[in-house]
Length: 358
Image (cartoon, rainbow, N blue to C red):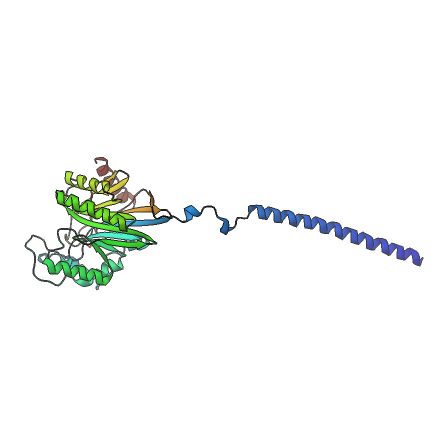
């Protein structure tokens, strides 16, 4: 009997050992299968074959139109830029509060500074003379505006002193400037963006020579060249022959983008030899008119892509952001607002219609 019990125990132990080995092999096979499957779908970030695409650099440029931070002293006090500033307790951020997020997200924001930052009193002999308190430069700074064009018909409204005061004020505030002999270059993630500025009332040979030489020189220093012109006829919705000739010439000489101001209204956009010519951006924060009849304008944006050699490989389609230069309709409160809905569609159609005529 004792032998029988021992034999039975030995048989039970052998069965248990055999069962555990079988189960163990099955589980091991399942785990091996899982590991094999996991390995086949795993991609190490160190072995990423898309390195060329990842090394590309994108740069977004924004541009807005005529910007006068101040006014003409003959305007008095009612509804002027200065009075609006005082009514909002000297808040530098008031004027750009509706658009500054756009500018702070891009890589370079450009406007045309149509006026002076000066305390000079000797005025130029002309109809309108614009100046603002030098502290108004903080409006640009707070609003994310990086650089301004000085090449326009109001930079010398207070003579050479007014111009020099403006340059000093901009430099001290860290705002870039260009035009009337100055050139601007900004380094964006290793890509250098160069900006030039000119007035373009006519197109004599000396201006043609200057534009060509400046662009060629800038192309030796920068990877992207933007040229700004103050040109055209006030209140006209179509560029004149001089604008078209100068804009196309700048592109032929190597400009990657041409931006225009001065008409104070929107003009069309032309794509010429793969580059955009924006004939007029309209106004922006414009203290030069307390109630312009046409308050339509837009912010122009374009993104440029560069490869690992810092060569331009792509210019994306433009992005147009319609704005009104005032947040109220009955006057100019110098606070641009982004348009939405039917008003946005209306201004986009307006730009499209004007562009089709080019």
